[in-house]
Length: 238
Ligand code: ADP
Ligand code: MG
Image (cartoon, rainbow, N blue to C red; front, side):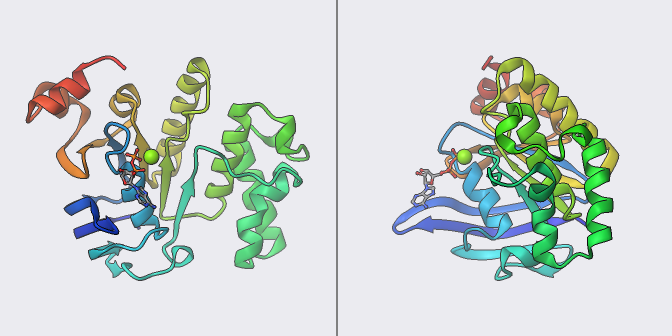
């Protein structure tokens, strides 16, 4: 579970081609980071995989099944946004429960998953609070908790830490990496931050203007960059 393949996927907005034909395989359990400068198409690519945008052409397969025209809810993926998108009037518990309620998960199973997610995210003491009573890091954890309880075959993160201050970002990077080690679920993580890419990824996909410049492990990219762009991007400080 959690194997995603893109076959000659393209995306245009009107006349503007944002993703030229692109092939990519994401293996089960991999932590894949899409990295590249602002506007290069990272979010678009993630939204195509999530089904939040339709491809212009090409095919997306998830666990062997053609998902190109599948609605987002059927894809078995969970997206975590930078803006958290929490419901301010609901408790943490209700925020986390919401997707399960929508999916009709039985109440005791909901409770079991909430307790487990809260434990792994250090949120057990905060379940009755509202988002406004939490720190930025805690809010981000709630957003991750809401993804975990859906038991997705892959997590999709779009710059989840960019609203946090530097020290908290370092902590959250470690927490997300630990979560990946514990769950062993595929994670696709979008960032423009080279340090995040180098420290978190099994596999890095370097994008420029919708093109994949190189795919490889952090060490591959560092020692064997295929071109000046990759060398400059990975080598240069943030
Ligand atoms: P990134 O996440 O790497 O910063 P995006 O995927 O958001 O980049 O955007 C890639 C390009 O596609 C940008 O030029 C952006 O302006 C354009 N774009 C993204 N979404 C839309 C849209 N809904 N309509 C028109 N253009 C869009
Ligand atoms: Mg983006």
